[in-house]
Amino acid sequence: MFLDLFPTKIYLENVSNYDTIQSDLDEVEVGIDWENLWDTHYISDKTFTKTLVPDSLGYEIANHVMRYTGRDDFRLTASWMTRLEPGQYAVAHQHGHSDLSGVYYYKTNGDEGNLYFMNPALAATTSIWSQAPNYHDIQPIQGSVVLFPGYLTHGIKTNTSPNTRISVSFNIVFQR
Image 1 (cartoon, one colour):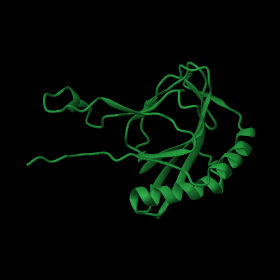
Image 2: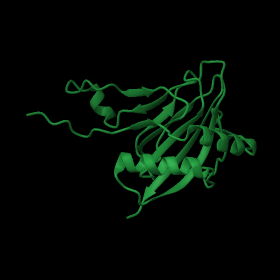
Image 3: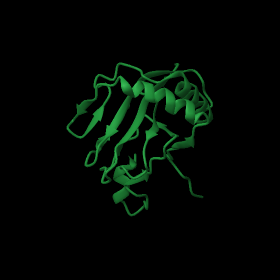
């Protein structure tokens, strides 16, 4: 008998009200005073205390969280926009204080740096018992949402394209 222990489900799906979300985010983007974060990329709020998710995207997030977890008893604790210019990236980090984290790809051609997830059992990747890779990439797709456990280490690979990518990230906490 073999057991597939400690799998980590990542949720990736397109939104259903894409045009409305894009239009609403166009209005949000106009008012952003971009801040440099760690000299690696730009962010809309370095304090992570504001929320900027318009109702149209909030509705989609709620639907996708329900599909992913089967739960609707959550609150959005923070949201922010991230902008990657050519040559920029986001260092590996976690959102361990959140049950779920997520990203909505607002503006991307898909070649401005993949989202990557580190293997949560990183020490096992050097063992003879594991064939698991150290990380897994997800290519950004405009109009899609990705949901994942907040404890999962993730980052964004260097934008080697001439394009700028903008995404909306958010954190979620479930009721206890």
